[in-house]
Image (tube, rainbow, N blue to C red; front, side, top):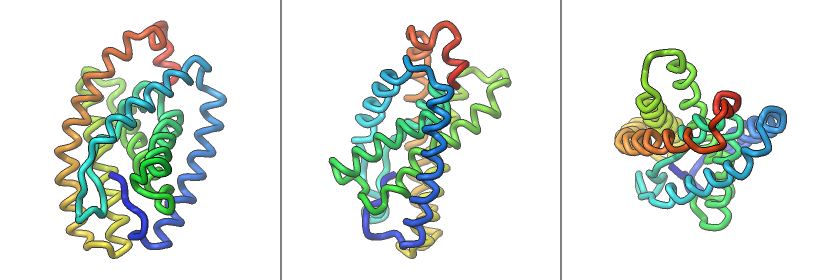
Amino acid sequence: MHIPDGILSPTILAAGAVVSVVVLAKSVQESKKNLEQTAVPIMGVMAAFIFAAQMVNFPLLGAAASGHLIGGALAAYLFGFWPTTLIMTTVVTIQAVVFQDGGISVLGVNILNMAIIAPLAASVVYKLLRNSKVPVSVMVFIAGWVSVVVTAAFAAIQLGASHVVSYQLALQTLILWHAIIGIGEGLITGAVVPFARRSSFFLGGREERIR
């Protein structure tokens, strides 16, 4: 869902950068305070997994955006919202700097979309369903799908506000494609979570402390 350089308005770029910086500053504080040191290498592994998954993408709206898996719902379930923003920011930044996927000037907006909005949407789903009788596999599937579609909607609004394309076209195209991509996101999240929960790191109640 990367948006490339040179198409968004300066106002949208500035707003995205400011919000991202504020949230990431808070993420660093919260992670230092609440995250166990043993989680750091596991977060690195998760970042590598998400990075690889996002490499498979395709252009949308004449390359005004791209479609691909995000991974925010998976990381948010395992690590919680605040650490996930740091994981996803690392992924998005490396993609922009090394592979020019997205771009430098639009980095703040892409971080906002994929590193903040995506895991935030998933975290809201987890909070709403955590105490329900919904199986974990179903819950993470829903969270994965919702995170992708909500992020696509925000990206469409940013493109529309920058007059790249009309709001209607942006919303219809991005939401349609990402509603399909979201199914894959949900299935992958649902498949990976059971294996992760059986790992030594998440045994012994650690999962509940960090999520």
